[in-house]
Structures are given as C-alpha cells and as structure tokens.
Amino acid sequence: MSKNKKTTAPNSSRRKFVKNAALALGGITIVPRHVLGRGFIAPSDKLNIAAIGAGGKGASDIANAWDNGANNVVALCDVDFARAKASTDKFPTAKSTPISG
Picture 1: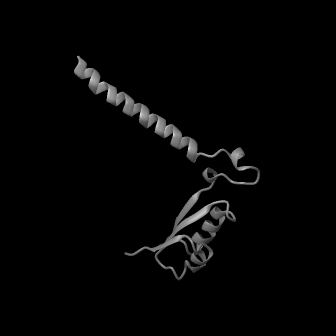
Picture 2: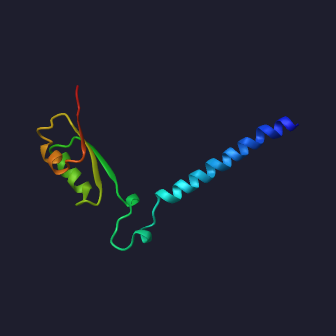
Picture 3: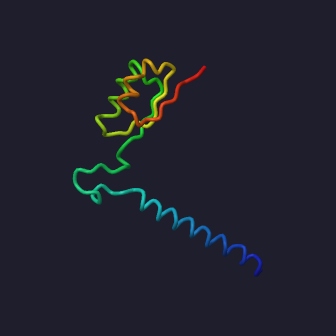
C-alpha cells in the first residue's frame, strides 16, 4: 500500500503545480482595461489579422479590418505582389509571403 501512496503523491503535487502555474500565467497575460488607464487599448482587445489575397478587393477589406490602427495586420499573402503593392506599402511590418503554385 505504501507503494500506491508514493505514486499518487507526486501526481497530486504535479497537478497542483500545473494548476497554479496556469492561474499565474493567465493572471499576467490578461490585463484588465482599468489597469492601463483611460485611453489605452488592452492587448486582448486587438485582433492580429492575416490576409490571403492582399491585392484588389482584399486591400480594401484589410484596410477596413485594420480600422485605423485598432487592429494589427501581421501577415499578407498573395499570388501577385504587384497587385498587392498598396497593402504591402501600407503595412510594412506585416510578414509578406507569395503563394506559389
């Protein structure tokens, strides 16, 4: 019987550790809006946008989703980056990847 107690004790403490670590991490990464003060946007209130088809109609869709900086455009993808030039110029920090066939 003592063998069973030894095997269950480490699992119990491991579970407690994982639970406490998850709670601590969740408390750190989710910042309430009132902590940042008035006029600041919490990181959890912003979208990270990746677009496939960044030229033509896609350019206007991306600009509307970006909403003048309310969201982040992080990645752009298109088969013809000549058509997507307006998007890549407007969002130079976004990672750009061509689609190859």
